[in-house]
Image (cartoon, rainbow, N blue to C red):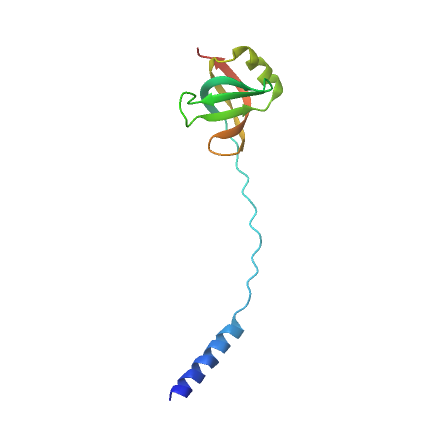
Length: 111
């Protein structure tokens, strides 16, 4: 009886595995997200005198740095080193939670 149950199990297992087909999945294309304008408040800081950042929560260890990528707008911020500004723009690329590329649209000095 054991031999028969083992034989039946093998036949069923072989039959089921023979019917299994490989399902081809089409690659999922990443969804293109609409970029929307955001407003950030932060301190204007420099790195190597070439890269300009607006840093949110600048007194904390969990600060968020937005690198300004449009050069003309960045040049206008050079005069405002260590000033607090409110900036409107679009996040172009997220490198991490703390580092982002930011396309600056407009800004105003707060302090």
